[in-house]
Amino acid sequence: MSETLPISLADLLIDTENPRLPQPNVGQRDALRALAKHLPKKLIALAKDIVRHGPNPVELPIVMSFKDDLNRYVMLEGNRRLVALRGLENPDSLLGALESSLLAELRTLSKTYQEAPVESLTCLLVDDRDEAQHWIELRHTGENEGAGIVRWASDDAARFRARSGGFGIHSQALNFLEAGGYLTPEQRRNVPATSFFRLLGTPYVRSKLGLKVQEGKLYLLADEKKVAKALLHVIDDLVSERIGTRKIYTKKLRIKYANSLPANIVVTPTASGGEAAGSQGAKAKAKSAAAKARRLKSRDILIPRDCVLSITALRLREIEAELRKLSLANYTNAVGVLFRVFIELSTDAYMTRNSLPIKDKKGYDLSLMQKLVSTANDLVSRQKLTKQQANPVHSAAAKDSFLAPSITVMNQYVHNPHFFPAPGDLRAHWNSLQPFMIAICSP
Image (cartoon, rainbow, N blue to C red; front, side, top):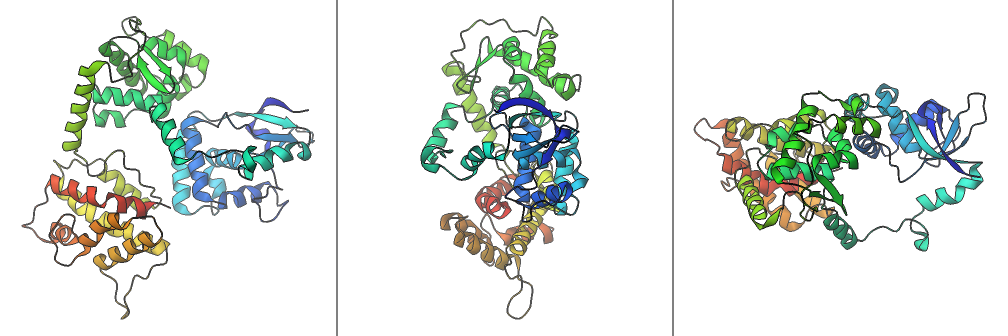
């Protein structure tokens, strides 16, 4: 008879008969490393999600007793989660099993994970494999005419995002503060997202801050300025490290923190919560829209915050990070030169990854313009880029073109001492090439 119970991570064993293992019964170390090699990028994505949100409480791991004197359990379902947690505990246990760039990313994630490690998992305990077989098969073999997980169609997913506000409640709170001018984009980047998410995910904490959640949307229960003041107080506590992850890791600790808020910070509800955060009335909506429009016109970094690039190569990740920080107004020349380097190295990485020729028939290295055309054509053939999205790339690669975006122009940024880049031109370059950059950086 199955039951649920919390089990220490140290007492959980990888199932050496897991179907993802090429060879069964290979021992725990070899099983760990073999599973890490299976879809390694997806393993890192899982580890990243665990660091940010914790283990998925919706899908319980299924275990059975190992029947040894140490009271250990075999993980029949959930082995990838266990491998991700083992990797977060000790990244070097996967040395040689993961490529260096992925291992470096795992080490970075591990530093955050160690601030509040997962000590146990709530599991479903079954008597034997036969009892678990139906549920495991149902979980991994598709819809099964409706008995399994039925995936949402694109319209279903769009409706879910629309009804849930499209963002986590912590992101909605940050959007509200930024749109209202209470928080700058630079200050927002310094907010510890995981800790802020944990706090706002606790209803008691939200009640102290004048907030409530309804159908995934965050609502204000009092005057906008009072709620903003309370949120900024919490953010200041997080950024200044007056409270760290360990002090708010459990619900009990988060309630304790909420009860310690100063009286002048705690928000007394004055409204029923009929207005979503950041949209109290038509005037506030107009103000928010105008503020958003101003930000779009005067974006002071090359790569927009909402542009997600899936980069694994360490050098490229560092360049991306710099391009997301450097001010276009203050470091125009640096951004112009670095942008040119970023395009070429990203294109080289894509061509190498996909075995595209980097030399012409005579054995000479292809020019960047030729590389761009070859890469764009390959992306279109793989349906990762539409022909319309590829047009700016072909224009950029046109010989002696001085239209934006243009490699000719970018080469001038590097080699011509009399050719000065402008922030607006650089923004236009990126905006035109963004679909291409997203496509070549995707797995």
